[in-house]
Length: 149
Image 1 (cartoon, rainbow, N blue to C red):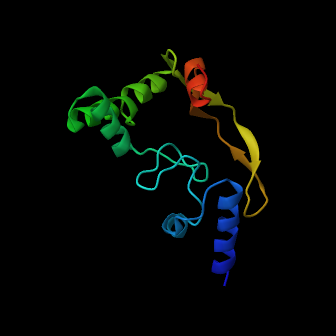
Image 2: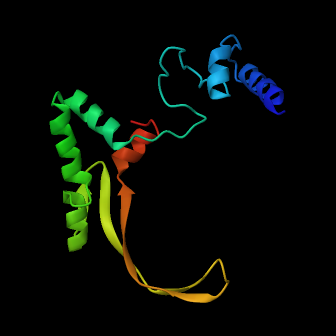
Image 3: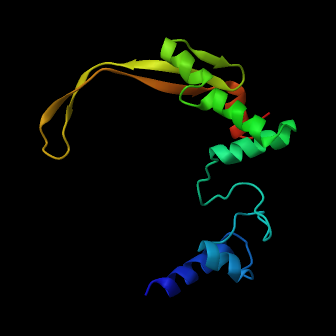
């Protein structure tokens, strides 16, 4: 029932954004117009509509390509850093702070015990104290994300 309304809405949005509505295949697949500057073969840049996430395999492939190392070596490097028994997790377990200049800081923050509510019953419950990993982005990373020099 809502399909016709959806197509009309995306057509209007495409025209509003200055994108000619001559690529119905892209509209049909994604249900919305491509990002400004996106080409029809491979989408260059990030889409403005959908949040994208890079998984471990994609990170490994990118590392292998950029450093000219094998994918197996890149996978070992990624696991050595980010695995639950990796370097960063190990240092956080010890209570140390991991500082990567220009990228950011990883640290373990202590959370105090507190009172909370059980959402199912509405009753008051005691939440135990815990230690949570935290990341704070560095200046260069913030500038890179915001497209500044």
